[in-house]
Image (tube, rainbow, N blue to C red; front, side):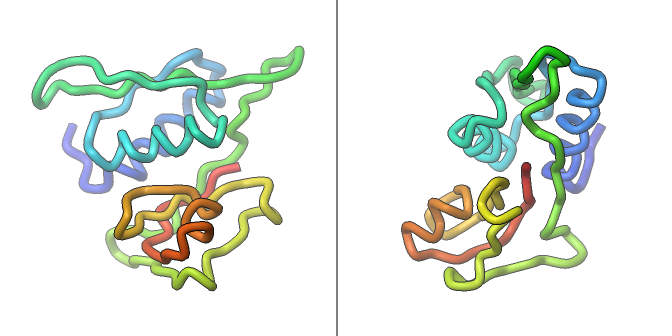
Amino acid sequence: MAANDTISDMLTRIRNSCLVKHQTTKVPSTKMTVSIAKVLQEEGFISNYEETGEGVEKFLSLSLKYHGKNRQPTISTLKRVSKPGLRVYSKRKDIPRVLGGIGIAIVSTSRGVMSDREARRQGVGGEILCYVW
C-alpha cells in the first residue's frame, strides 16, 4: 500500500490502535515516521519503537501506552496540521502551545523533527506536522 501522506497514515494507524486498545501497532518505516516515533517516545506518549523487516518491507513497531484501571490510552488525540495540499509553517515565536502545554506539536525544523518545546528552546521554527495530546 503506497500512501502519499505517510504521516497521516501513521497517525491514523496509531489512533485506530488506541481505540481498540492494541498493545502495539505497525507503520511503514520512513525517515520521517522514525523521527516522529522518537519524539512521541521522548515526550512519553509511546513506551518504545523498533524497526523490523528489510527494504520496502520495513516497518516500525510502536508500543502504545495506557494508564489507569480502564487502560485509557495515553494518546487521546492526534491531529494532522500540515498536509501535502496545505503546508503550515511557523516562526519560532509563533509555534502554537497545544492545550496550554499539556499536548505537544511535532515540528519539522532545519535541525530535525522535534517537539514544540524543544523547537522553542533551540529558537527554531518550521513545519507544524501534527498535534498530540
